[in-house]
Image (cartoon, rainbow, N blue to C red; front, side):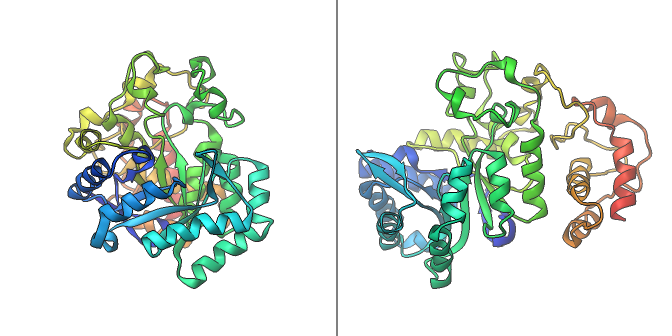
Length: 379
């Protein structure tokens, strides 16, 4: 297993975690087998959003004295109605469900403000006592870091700009990223995705990833397989399937991403996700899927690394990430971005303008011009 730092939390999280959603309603033996399998691979981050008491207790029991070795994402505002998950901003109700989570796990590493997708969601969290309650939880030590979950880039950026969240759980996959940001992904989730809507990596989603890097807000990834649609020949909007390794690599290539949390309910599903760890580079390459997609935003780097190898050993994707963040506000470039840029193994300065990278780039990025701008802006 490899580990990454999750933004300003400073926590080292496994690049593949475990989403526990599909363990709900499963017998304890199955829950324990799945948890044990994930731990054996070095997984150290688990998402527990489900409000049901039984599944929470099963997970807690399966972890046992290993609780201290893992980090739990627990969601604040995840409640139940008619045996289905629900969203509540009513403080007494929110407290009842979250205090049960605390009873089972003792503390929550990442306290996630649940499901902030709309303007109303934003107001119900940040303009009410809800946010105050979350801050008090951190002050009390009940949660160690404040995060939130979202599927909407516009709302997510607004939440991040409050300065309260340290990390975000966001849905990332090559389908959601290609939809126009004004289109809510779940409007198409059940009936299927029309490839005619795809326009290339939507600028607002790209801006969210840059903002997270700029503000040092780490991302954990949900729905990396698009609810299994990308793995299914019947449901993939691309006309061909992706592998779990390709989907995981795509998510890990987005800026600020620390961990991808696939939902697994069996040992076999855990093992399938972990194939990524031993996969060759060509097995993780997802560009064949994206090359056939309409791209209205040609020239924008998606940090896929297909420009490599560089004869001058420049880490082009990393330089492009830092440059894009610097462009957000050229007069107030964060010192951390300059420091990260200057500590890369090879800066943009020695670019020989050979053009190898531009010839290989599937998105028409003017790499040579960008390397020159990076050297000028970032030293």
